[in-house]
Length: 288
Image 1 (cartoon, rainbow, N blue to C red):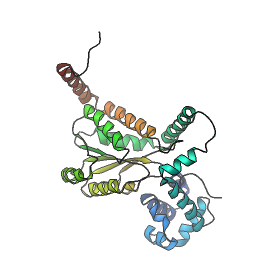
Image 2 (image 1 turned 90 degrees about the vertical axis):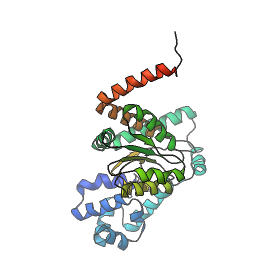
Image 3 (image 1 turned 30 degrees about the horizontal axis):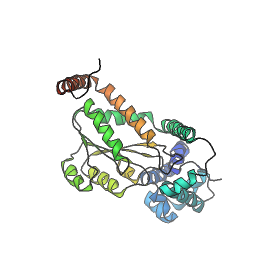
Image 4 (image 1 turned 180 degrees about the horizontal axis):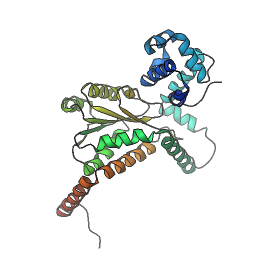
């Protein structure tokens, strides 16, 4: 019977029990997910450097009767991850009757728990170390909705360490930013469904120029993952016309805390100087 969990998650979980050829194929599918498995079995086998029987054995190990059964389930998941806000709202309207506060809070709590269970601590630690490296400049960008989270990340990361830049949400400002991007720089990308072609293009060009790409995405994984060194997937479903960005925000704040811990000697000095500047400029009102 076909599995109902996200296909990429099932592939990762199955890795330890696969043969060498099956692992090679699974890695190819994950690297080019979900596009790689939407074509013919012959095309997938050729691209993955394996035989067609290897493809069949892999999908059967995942619980599917055959490749066509596997593709049918995958197409259903692709349709779900590209669903429009209007369709999401119509589905949410059919949810069990309860106050929206309770339903939404429950969904966010479940998302957070599932996200923390899915993220590899070693992958998280490697990402934090990359962002803490003083020899690397940090660029951050998001899409139409997630740009606000990129902005929030940069606002606080600028306090923690120098050389942190927010890429404009105007596409005509991206070429100049890419022009200055050099090998070893880090581009933090936020991209959740419906994935944006512009974000994918920037990640592709940045990788070509030698930048390290960190992708924070949803559990279906943005196509920009093909260019990323580190991928941190989040669960985002909510009883609303829009997906919830709450788990992305928690992940960002956790990364900020981790980087702060790794750079505290520098960060403490920067924070003291910043507080002095706030005092001198009287930016904040004093309360007696």
